[in-house]
Image (cartoon, rainbow, N blue to C red):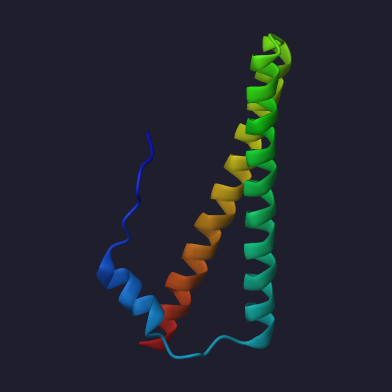
Length: 96
């Protein structure tokens, strides 16, 4: 089963219509954060694929280890996303 996430349109509109007032240093920090988040999601996906393969092979202990690794990467990615949203919220308040 796949879930579709919907963003609150008023929040999305505020973020997309914000003037470009981000300092170069903050912009670079944001770029690095997005890349780090993406890297963790890629590692989580890889670990989930490995877990599925281990299950197919009947090696459920290795599947469990891969699943735990995937969860760790997902957690780190979500923490990065929370920080990113916080930074966007703070910069949008500064613009007002």
